[in-house]
Length: 75
View 1 (cartoon, rainbow, N blue to C red):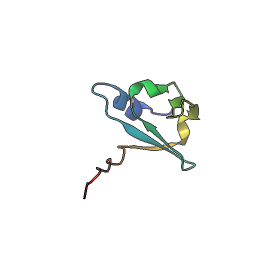
View 2 (tube, helix red, strand yellow):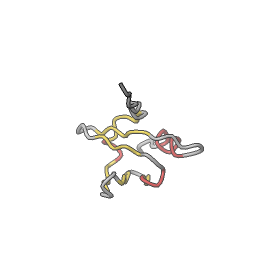
View 3 (cartoon, rainbow, N blue to C red):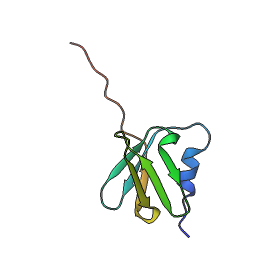
View 4 (cartoon, helix red, strand yellow):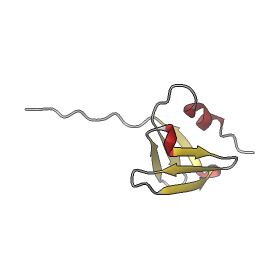
């Protein structure tokens, strides 16, 4: 069985946003734990447009922190 423990670990305790990277090159930002559900072999993610994407966990290549937000600099 696929090990989804690293993903579940990200959802426990104090939540920090993260990005899920898939084998086809797609990326899904998870800004809050309410935007993701983890099953036995599938993961469902709700995107910013309120669309749901259900992916086979075998296609998850990596999990990373989101890129830092750029600050607006005034001249």
